[in-house]
Amino acid sequence: MKQLGPALLSLVLASSLAALELVTSKYPRTFSLLRRCWAFYVYATIYGVIAFCVTLGLGALVKSGTIKLEGLGLSSPWVQAVAVGVTFKAFLHIRLFSVSVGAESFPVGVETLVQLFEPWLQRTIELDHFNALRNYIAPRAQKYPDLELVKKQIAQNLPPSMSADSAEGKAFLADVQRAVSVNEVLRLYMSSVGRGLFDSVFPL
Image 1 (cartoon, rainbow, N blue to C red):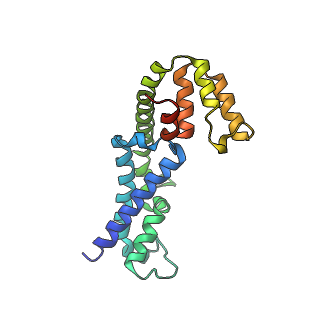
Image 2 (image 1 turned 180 degrees about the vertical axis):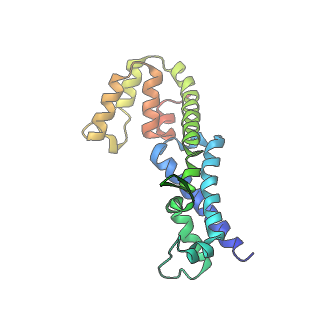
Image 3 (image 1 turned 90 degrees about the vertical axis):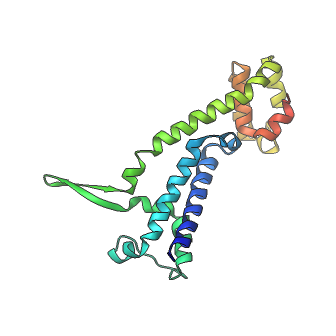
């Protein structure tokens, strides 16, 4: 039972970091649209469960040589829990067993199991985010139907990091000019600047 506390800590850390990694890599400006996406929470929680199980079985894994822990303070179960929670993806390479067919051996590990759900969950999250973004933009597209006026408003309301003189700003404005519908250009703008600035430029 004394391992339960550290295991729960690693679960919380790994879940939080998995969610943060997904958000910062794919939805840095519009992550608030995922608050009702069940797949997002399942995705993060599964990585937490993996870290939880690794922490509970850490002694056996170290003893068998599957995992090697070295570093300051790693004799403490709480420090070990933090290490597992922070480096949760490293433990995907743990081999559970091997299947031999003739002379060939095929390792089956945690990563093999993760691949059963990760692509599907990420696709579900992507679709939910797209639908939430589309629904959020729809009333603005109805209120601001003039495509050229919307493009002008966007060009006049870019953050300093996306100024017309910067490489990022030039690339973004080129995408804006290529947009052929109000929905498309509003989606580009919100994905780039986030809800705060988007709502102030295109209030309902």
